[in-house]
Length: 148
Image 1 (tube, rainbow, N blue to C red):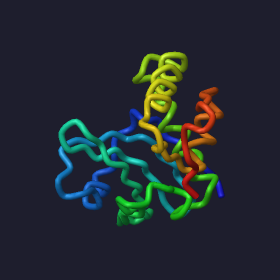
Image 2: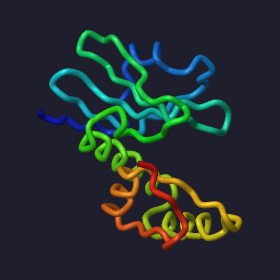
Image 3: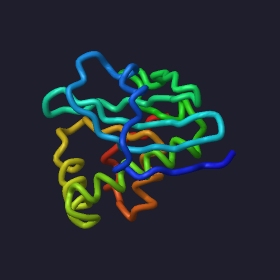
Image 4: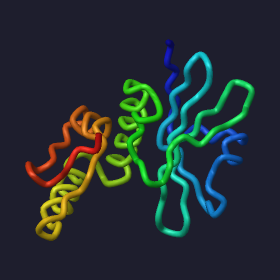
């Protein structure tokens, strides 16, 4: 399977808007992987200041399907792990750029995870942990759980 990776600055294909949540006010393209059969897009669908992750499969014929339910953020439950990892890597590459670089994001994430109230830990899908590792981001031990 050949992969064609797109840049986050690429426009979101018009057909994708049919598969976004109805209350979407703004969109961000967080990742895009094209395969021989279609494209997988990881999109931030915004309502006000918050963005929900939406995984869309766009067939070559421009029909789309939403694949990621709101209550399950694990991309690899719905698409092959290599594609999930690539989308996660594209997403966190953007996050690092938006947050002022690797060191700034590392500090913000560490502070966020270590400030969590006792007994609560953030949850990360495996493909997100892999992407963070590729980018040189380290999570404090015992500050998170792996979603499988």
